Amino acid sequence: MYQRKIPPSLNCGLDLIGEVLYGKWKVRLLWFINEGHKRPSELQRKIPDASRRVLNMQLKELEEHELVSKVIYPVVPPKVEYSLTDFGKSLIPVIAALGSWGDEHQEHLRSVILKRAEFNYIQ
Image (cartoon, helix red, strand yellow):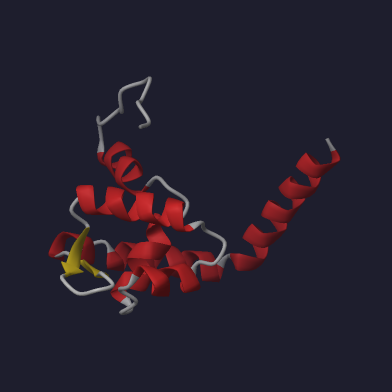
């Protein structure tokens, strides 16, 4: 199991939100669960670039931060579903605002990201 070498800095709201949402797929997981994609296989299909292991780890962290809840149904094979808690639902307007900002500035952001990727590829 991973052990942190440096304790988290929790001095302000940005530190806290970074701690909770740090992870490549967490924002997308929250968004897709909000849209009704609740089964791990559905989430895997929505985010094919992520490995199942990483998605499971990030879902577990979101659960530990009380943003999502997990229900395991006692059937064979086991059925698992995730849903947003009320606390998790309170993040959806923030994620929507970030998505709108990204849509509004997508040309500029795409060019900056591609320029940086080319620079790193050349080195």
